[in-house]
Image 1 (tube, helix red, strand yellow):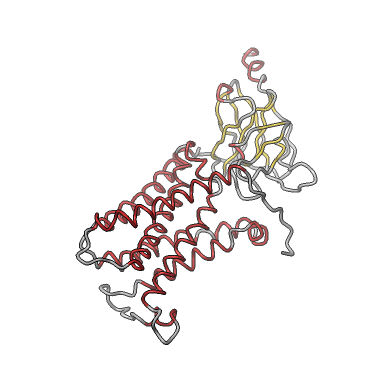
Image 2 (cartoon, helix red, strand yellow):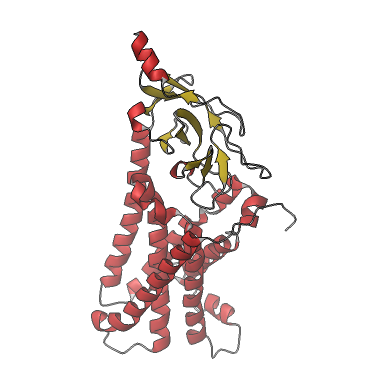
Length: 354
């Protein structure tokens, strides 16, 4: 813990988020344990251990699906943004659910062996040269490893220690985990079932994740404006602005800027919080300070600096007004650079002069 970082305290939103998440997991497990036997109509009764393992495995798969759908949904519709907040708590819970699934499997199939359970798991099936009977356990192990890495490094200490770019790239392992889980299910239970409910569940989930990501990518591409030589481009009009709130705009390089209206003047900063890339544009302004809705970090919208004694900074952007059209320059200023706010009333003066 030699690296300096600021611990994030729990707040009301975090408690509510986790309460809803835990209730949803409990509801899923109850429904699976008590409803699926009659729905699936097994020829032979399944023992409790296997049924529990399937319940936790199915729950982990659905949790991963929801996690990967939250991001593109939030990019397509702002109403999904509350689900994005504290999403890493969702990921940590998914890792524990998946670990419980693995525990049931090991304790049922390999508990009576004289050798190590892990060794038996790895040596139970070595048919690597055929699709039918392929050792699907390997995909499950890979997925569990990825989830373990993500859960372990979710703490703020690792974000500060690894730096945000490396931490973000590391957490792309969530996609590796999801593909591994799909392969684990496809080569496992889907090859040994009479009822195809699970098959449709996996197909619909996979297409939902892929489809939403494609839709979000096309929406972002459509939103981008073709610029040359770093020219100014339009953000919106004065009618689009609300006092104390921001309008978020997508820049040509893929970054997002938040243009705030504060006391009749416009200021623009990066939409990504320096702490964990939270959406600053979703926060509200109080005394020149915008509060990140994720973890309550604050920044002066004129300079992008956190109030003393905190040292976090985000980039700022230059603004200008042409008529009633607000324009931003896509080249960011260094983090913490003060930019004089632009009075919104300039538009009236320009229009009157013409």
